[in-house]
Image 1: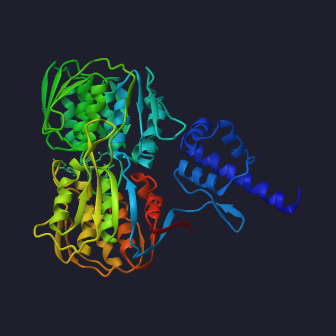
Image 2: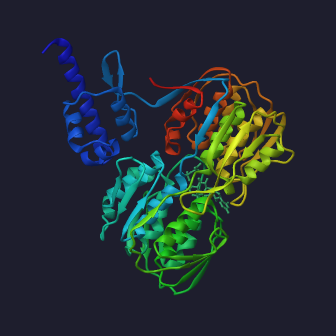
Image 3: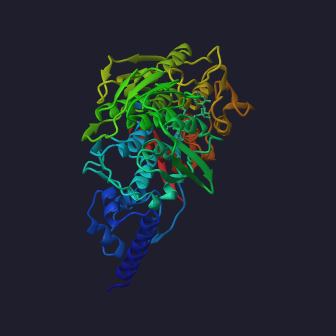
Length: 519
Ligand SMILES: CC(=O)N[C@H]1[C@@H](OP(=O)(O)OP(=O)(O)OC[C@H]2O[C@@H](n3ccc(=O)[nH]c3=O)[C@H](O)[C@@H]2O)O[C@H](CO)[C@@H](O)[C@@H]1O
Ligand SMILES: C=C(OP(=O)(O)O)C(=O)O
């Protein structure tokens, strides 16, 4: 063996060791990692033993599958590296068409809902995002079989009769708030159980009290201590009941639906959220045989069935927040682009405000999403001179301006002439992150933790910024960098993968100049 061959083989063994450690850290078997990579278990075994030549492409897929950039190939020496960064050269118009992917928030609700089904749930066209992988890790850790098909888009989920809740992947669970939606399905399966605290983005305190109130009529009592929710299902439950949600929250409505689905009787949920992810969940539950009256309204009447056992096939709808992100990319770069498959019902208020601000756009005829209910359109943007809206921009539970779409209005307002007041009454810590836009030349003043005043138009300039620990504000910075002439660097962008699939690649396809790099 020559010296070069010796060095290569040593490098491959080192990489193999890193892959094995990372895989075990994630609690994955070789077969599970193989599934994520779309390869065979024997190929993973060869990689871990250092007996497999590695292309850059395979290294990239390994890093994505293991949720972290473990390996870099620089100057011939592999070694551990830190987070992912972006180098952006902005000021270039985008062009062409971009297709909106299916939603993160429906995907996580449907994954939790699959716990209700004794049959096999096939979920199609599921977003390949870290948030989905986290819930899948948790499901697999308790014994659920979840398999991607060979296209990597469709998931088959089969739940065993007995779940191994003691083996729950607490690390994955703590990194997502959606774990809270295990409560509704699990209260039918165990009299006592523990779940790790729900986590997620740093948006300030997010109460789970409405969930406790909504699930109490189903006999659920939860005590929180030592990093865990200790759940007991004891109280006797009546056949028919009416629940009034104290907040019209999305996941609390979903939790109430999940609990009601297997309750033998009728549950009326008042002040329910009719938002997009709730609608997807209702449609899936209907396929499981649960009748739900009031679809798309704030009063849902659920006719539960104690046993849900059906092989179902469901495709969640397109993500309105992704659509808003892509629209914002087009608006702030003054581009003529078409955002295809946008769920119009969940963007109407956003578009009405943008129309008032002077945005020119055309809508195609409506067509149905795969779920048969959600109305989609293609939105073509025309470069427009924007003016600030007369009234403040503020979110409301649906039907209102989507809370997750609000941050994008800060970037858009910065390109408009005049001052825009943005009022995020919802999250304590989200508006604060928008003040990072000043680093790119915007005039964004934080009036208090919930209100920012944006004065436009902005002469954007490039800068180097570290991503805030919040998904949407992080994407807002990236989009502002697309508007800023010259180079920018956005550091620690891994949080974006929590909710967006191939965002950079798709923006690059539209003409953006974005390069991924590591230290
Ligand atoms: C997985 C998922 O689906 N996540 C979405 C869901 O989270 P989720 O349903 O978990 O949202 P929260 O329950 O945290 O609600 C968001 C905030 O709004 C407040 N609140 C909500 C409703 C209401 O009527 N009154 C009220 O005050 C809550 O107290 C909280 O501070 O809804 C949020 C608000 O749309 C979105 O940002 C999240 O993307
Ligand atoms: C706040 C968000 O999501 P989550 O509820 O998953 O934290 C979001 O999608 O912006």
